[in-house]
Image (cartoon, rainbow, N blue to C red):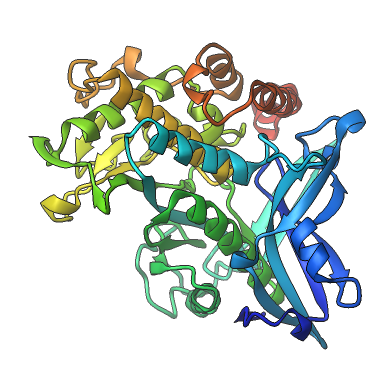
Amino acid sequence: MQLERYNGHIEDADFLSMLMVDIAGNIRSVSLPRGYVSDKVLADGVGFDASNYGYAKVNNSDMVAVPDMETAFYEIRGDYRILHVLCDVVSTEREPFGQYPRNVVRAARDFLREKGIADTAKVLVELEYYVFEETEYKTGVDQAFYRVKSAEGLGEGCDDKPRVGLHAAYHRLPPEDCYADFRNETVHLMEVLGIPVKYHHHEVAVSQLEIELDFMDMARAADMVSLAKWIIKQVASEWGLCVTFMPKPLYKMPGNGMHVHQFLEKDGKSIFPGGVLFNLSKEGLAYTAGMLSHSLTGSLLAFGCPSTNSYRRLVHGYEAPVSATFAKGSRAAAVRIPGYVKKDETRVEYRTGDASCNLYYFLAAMILAGADGIVKGLDPVALGYQSQDAKDELTFPLNLNAVLDGLEKDNEYLAPAFPPKLIELWTKAKRAEAEYVYNAPTPQEYELYF
């Protein structure tokens, strides 16, 4: 894969690839040949059918994609030079389409400004994922199976090769780490596009990797993380590998989370550092309480953990946090206050979410949940969230239908950015996924009951 920064000369491209984000958070594309591209196209955009993106009805699906040239970059693919650009989506009346992911995350940021809470939220996103040499799966009325293989010690033919334990791969070097060169290539390409990377390394499980990005404005972070995932998948394909961001692709193996470090910034400074508790300010604590309170209802999890597979990861006894708790330096808490940062850089880390989310929606919902805590002056200590005991009343709902029930009851805090129709469409789509998965027998059930 070869990428280059955009030099301002659209005539250097053979094709203009207009990138849009669907309701699930996937990037899609429509390509225009150079002969069709003009200043008018760049300014006015191109019409498309939004019903296939999941957030518009067939009888009212005409939308317009308008290139955001600040996001443009080149990909050299074979003999052709492609100019990719993320697009904004507006209605045929030129109004921003409220359900479009880029518009939702901006609306959440605008709410912070309108309420005088902050100018923006800054977020650092961790990407965890598995990589395999071979992947095979199939479902039907007569069968259901999956099979993967990794050079690090998964699958047939690995018994006679030196390897580390299944859970002993954290921070390993080559030759135990078989994917260091693969990570180096993806991170290099991210840096070409200006995606800030803090570091990358091998994760705990064999075949499990992590790339930690650096802090960005919340709207830019949603764009850049989406592009980073695309780069990882594209390079994997070129290298003959398969990548998955599934929360729990392997039984009894560590899951993939999407931990999000965050703070609110006003007048160029974070409002989270303070001397109340754990080096947090009153606002930082109230923000934490807001996130945990809306997680406890299930509402925030409906966007942060929106797949049935999310709840294979979120189970008692594993590292993934399942309770409304916060603590300094504890990775067992849903909100962790990192202990290694300086006092004046204190931030919070939400550890429950995963990459099956639409990151635009997840960030918007999370920031609005925290802002709701500030507006209401919530106290996480008074609410009992400082406890590290496994209390039933602090346990999150732990299946997809339950968190969707929570979203239907607890969504008022989302109103500044989430149109009611979007919540309705999201709930309907996720209920269909839940029905598909939960109604099917599993191989484990055959093993137990056949």
